[in-house]
Image 1: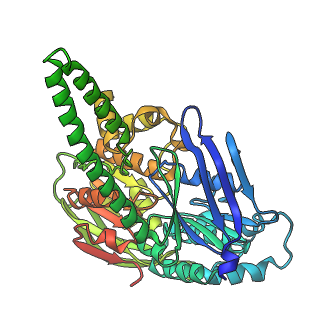
Image 2: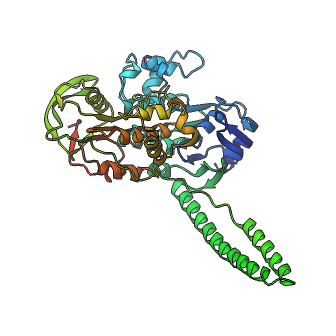
Image 3: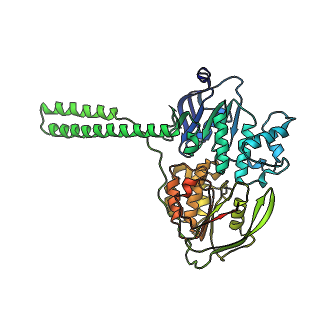
Length: 485
């Protein structure tokens, strides 16, 4: 096995690439992937991790440098979202589409791979009728069914419940071929990773490390601390030399030569300073303001629908949400959580009453309630009843949205950046009811404690769905409605 792992199947040599005009992603990047390794690809939201996958699959062509892929290497990619033009396909058509030629024994292969991702689905069922969690499993299965030499997985745990993540983790541990995974789920990554590629959003370089996710985070933190200490000592010595140089320069005569030498020494020490990694920034602490003037019962639920073996069943319940009431909606993938949230947000839910004139802030897991053809500025401005650019810019900057990104179209952003735009929109909207469907999806792990704090402090009624226990544990929850019980 050790000999097999020596074989390089992908090599990047001095690869540079830009996304659009003047948006560098990679700058003379070098790294290699060895056969049989399981690699985590790390980096801040919008750094370009998904672009690296695109370069490996040849969906993108690099501006400079060379990418060597082993001859005959089969590659499959599990993407973050199902393309919109595939939402009306049947399950059978969806899986057939991943193969270049017609597969005549496709049905048993579909059943086998759906077993791996713990999903039971009729082959004639239309893709858009599945829940977000079920669609995530279908995406995953569409990559796994190809049994590739190199498996690329982009945020594969998004929308997966605890059981789904456990199935995927076991599959990856047992998988004998090569895997590269983009994910922000530390516990998941530590279970199988033996190496890390770190894409630095500031230098546009890729650093390669051996070890699991936690090992590498510790190693980077230790190095940054060491470099900061060294720079602090140099800065002190530089200042001392400058002070002495100024003192001697004022003496005149021979002392001016001494002052000159001291200035030169200070300049040499400036050059010796290490270019310390700029730590991935976390978003600023923020508050989602609650709509003024709302009192009493803002939302009441007397009944709701759940899916059981692909059939809808009505359940009776008594839930009343007032100011400061936080409800966690729980249950397995496919039970109907997202469908219920959607019907609450668009006002079509039966058995539900919402006070008139309540502004509903809806964080949708696929961001389809954002207009992908609008710019970030236009989408954020639409959340305000008045267009105050200064206020919009200030809120956006807190979510690391500035510069060219402010005027970029929503559709061109990474999934993580779309998530930050969605949160910025909630801040500007000042909702009377907050509905959040998997708000951790695609979001950098550094931002999650900040988001959890803001949700915990929201003073209005809130309904949240999340399969990430660590995140939920940081939020004040007053009531739990488990659709599975």
